[in-house]
Image 1 (spheres, rainbow, N blue to C red):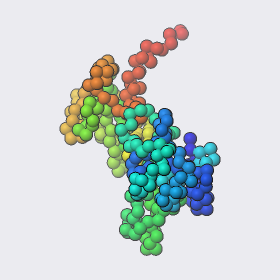
Image 2 (image 1 turned 90 degrees about the vertical axis):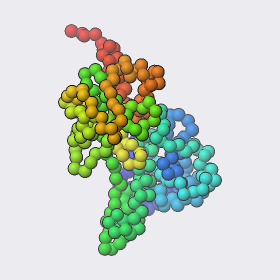
Image 3 (image 1 turned 60 degrees about the vertical axis):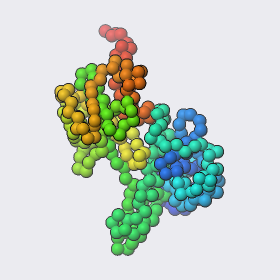
Amino acid sequence: MIDRSDPRRADDSFVDAARHAAESCYVVYAGSDALLAPSLPIAPASVPECVVAKLGVDTADSVFLGLLDGVAWFAIDVAGLPEEARAPLLGFGRFVALGPIQDPIDGEAWSLLAQARALLAWNARTQYCSACGAPTEMRDAGYVRACPSPACGVLHFPRTDPAVIVRVTHEDRCLLARQPAYRPGLRSIVAGFVEPGESLEDAVRREVKEEVGLDLATLSYVGSQPWPFPTSLMVGFVAESVGDEIRVDGREIESAEWMTRDAVRRETQSGALVLASAKSIARRLIDDWLNADEDLGAAPPNQG
Ligand SMILES: [Zn+2]
């Protein structure tokens, strides 16, 4: 796990030296596409400083990710470079859009990719002060953008946008719903952004009620996952609904149905049903439910 080294971010002499140190490594993005290492498991390519220094990008725009085994890691966006100038990077991996990846990704690698993407995207989108319009300046190696106007001086901090995702079950069935924008066959569990003034639990109950018309009898937190598109955090829950009468909103959700484990297995095998990618917390929540009956079957005999 990377040591984010919070206290070192504000140390300009450390950050400047590390940006140009031969042993430092860079995670590279071109806009929303990450440079991924050529081998599995999926991980960001580790590009040495000497390669980045010759690309023609300003490393002062790089953001500090932290220290990994004593080595400083930064992230930089090369989207502004012409394609031919990026060619030296292709010896380290290839640029890949993260969204379509179907394979599972190790949590640490995913976290590093998400940290880099979120910080680069936020810095790119916070070039001007949202309070007064003055151009902002990067501070703390990319974790602060400061408004230099004496009349304003607002400090801007990176944002994380929480979204909730919930597996709703009713007895032995799980609710799977389809949004109009989904690729063919894909059905998944209910998700939505948290609105200002809401608790996470309120957001889950509101989204489920709005999208499929169900009230929840039980609700519990399971875990969370950074979701770098570009700055979200998916917060995962499981819930049991009070009843089973579905009313789809027809707007965010075009169809929804209760499915048994057997039906999910049958339809995924035939290709009629496509589940969320293996890298997602959505898939983890669905797989946990799918495997729960096998877990019961495999339970050790009662020792009493
Ligand atoms: Zn300002």
